[in-house]
Length: 196
Image (cartoon, rainbow, N blue to C red; front, side, top):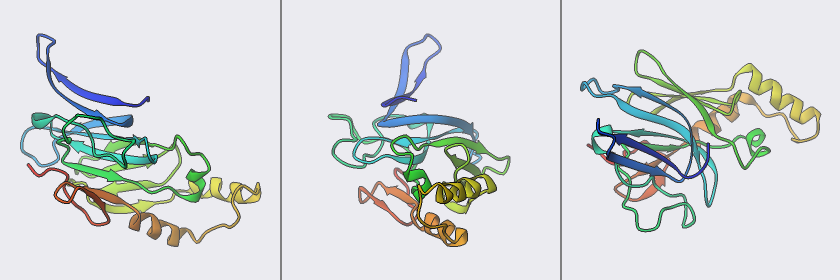
């Protein structure tokens, strides 16, 4: 839960085989064969730190683990490190409720279903994002606990207005960003960081 984080693979004799650096926190990870090729991918949820702090999801191929995650700005990278080999990198937006708790909002948990779809929960009771096997966003859900906390924040005067939760859900889905490795930019449509 501190920044930076490192994912590494060791050989049986304990020597370093491969590693990947992330400028932020990794709160949870899962290992699942998403593409049915016989080798599981590594899925990580957490937070990107530095120039901005945002919850994130990234998917790694353990056969090509190297480099550093894409940065959000000049203060969130690793000097002299090559670009990372992540397959997909996703930034998740903040709701006004989560923005009250910045810095420190993170994609707390990642759960991979038998189907290969994954659920990423921001903080403990925050929005839940559902992604397909390739890391494409399918849905966002604002659960009862999240809505209850939001209503309490309005009653306490910490937030001014109670939103239309369906509209907020749509705005969150539109606010998801993917790192496009070809252009080197964060984009609104699904993109691969590094195709295999």
